[in-house]
Length: 486
Length: 134
Image 1 (cartoon, rainbow over the protein chains, first blue to last red):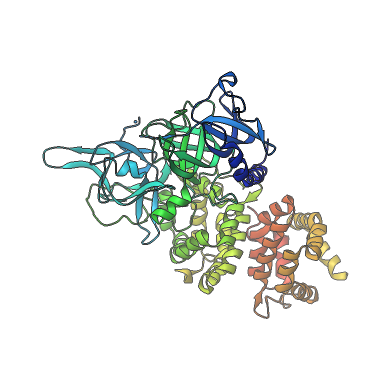
Image 2: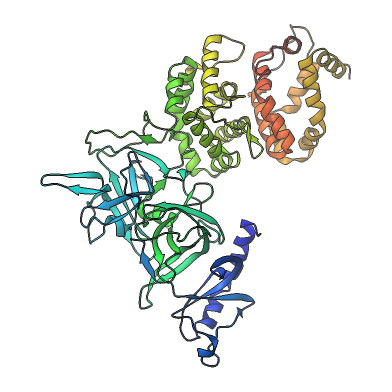
């Protein structure tokens, strides 16, 4: 089994040979395109990286003219003859209403009532307001325009009013790289940064050396309204697709083959689902299925979508965005939904408990005052981001959230050999080094009290008991959280 | 050398002290190697005046009146310990990383709460070192 790094290196080496291989292979009759991807044998993805030669139709050797047979190897690289990848928009069965909104659920527009999938909750870079992400051909189905109303599970009409409306399209783009659209959430349906059946999202995967968010052979998953939860393997991280007739439709798309056990990776109605890696980071936006197989899926690279829509995929493990959610209310409100604490959000019990205690309030005050800067550093500063991920910040956060929801759940003492105290020490130092003078001073002051707060706590309940004990101790030997952080 | 023997004798006098001694002995070679060969550890040690703090502790007396130096040229003892803990957990073995996690709270609490070696050894003897019991 090759490691991810080995796969990436081999893919890069073979992709460098692609122009030469293309020149040689496009001379063969019936060849429409050549790309680099995993070789398939007996309908299963193998580990072999090959030149995938897309042809109009597969023919038996005896039916081919002399010299028309595609060689088994070109430039020392195996070839794999596959049917031309024309795409069909993944355009129909989970039709339930979900409140709060989250990824992996059905949405529909007002013009046609056609259905697709809400991929994920995202955040506008400009004003940090919350939007719903899906595909252009879902939200603007039937020639609709920006301003179109979006419903969940759909929009239903009576003689005088429409119901189910949860958003309004504010931006959409369909070009050779992306098929995406966003809708500003209206009407207070609530939201949470999760995908049904997949869980919390931890931002978007960064681009790697190959210019994609995935490496050939990566295992990914998605949840759509039609086929639900499916898993698959990346056959090609930079595939091209053609329209019927052969014209290029899209370039640099992620081609995904369903894993054994899943009939299809996606199907009609799954368009708009986000494709997620094993760390619950979004890598792509599913927009079509492969017509030739009706099993493989194509996804836009998520960074292209983020750039096109000027959005960020929110990292649930990011300080300042915890809890990420807003409770649904019946009240109508046209104001953009802002990130805020909610009573039904994952860490609400912890927040309520902290607010009831003096020590807890001081801890919260620290994060309230500096959370925005910490959040910004986590998203933009490489040192901070790397430290957070290398010291298992997202994993500890996920366990804390689970512990808040399920009192019996225990937060592990260590994850991959890293304890929460290791994480806290690392983050303390890196935030002091990379943050503002004010943040550095506050972090330096609060490190020991926070260490005392988390030390040995294996559940949110234990943490709250510690907070109450520290309150009771008052002027104990252990330094309490300093009051000037308020 | 007399002082090192004194430290050892003090620590051997109580269960907590013996535990500390075991931890120190268990990691002394690795820490010494890292301080002398690992650039990040060396930088953390030198930039935060590790040698001067160490010398200051060795030179201080054992009475309650002999205060431990808590700040040198604007660098606090706590800053030194925090930076060293972080550098050691980044450069050290998995065992050392686990030890840093286990002892970060009591060591930093001691640096914050004890004014003299006498006070520190007193708390170790009495088993009242903050953060130790957990």
